[in-house]
Image 1 (cartoon, one colour):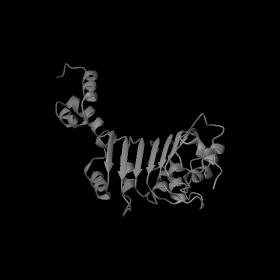
Image 2 (cartoon, rainbow, N blue to C red):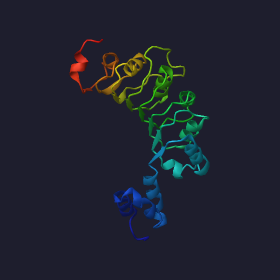
Image 3 (cartoon, rainbow, N blue to C red):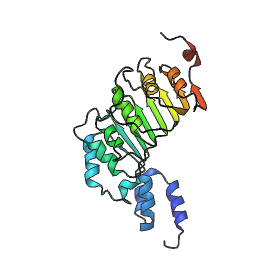
Image 4 (cartoon, one colour):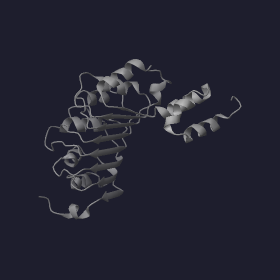
Length: 239
């Protein structure tokens, strides 16, 4: 086994199915780390208790399993009893993507990100099927200093309301891509993001999202590509 080049081992592990990764990790020590890195590249949680168990049971070593996670998915958590999500994000040193599906954003999360406790490595944020206050959602988005890709689907916020209560990263660079999807014509996400002067090089939108006109105005100097899935809707006069 020692005579096999590491590059060949890595190629074999990259080609096997996910169900075979556990077996690969048991072949030899040289197979273990690559297998674990792929197996734990993306992790998902649907309860706060499961996240607490992860934080308790998995060692937070700089080169251990927690450092292999690059994408964290959270689904259907409607309330938080403690700072579980903050502890989780702080433990994932290599995290680059965060997805929250039908999940409430904890009120304290944007503030802790703004203080630099964690989140510097997150470049992709995906929010789906959730309801947030204007301040909470925009605070989370704007507090991530290196965010490059933002996807928002069927998230309802009130367009009118106070500006984010947490500090915003100064001189934010334009996003590489901003995608808004959904069928609610009154969810106010477009207006909320335009109100915070969020700009993007690529802007794409599905039918029913309001605020695209405002986003086009604030992104006029940086926009290089625009995708509208219903141009007739875009050209109609507002109700």
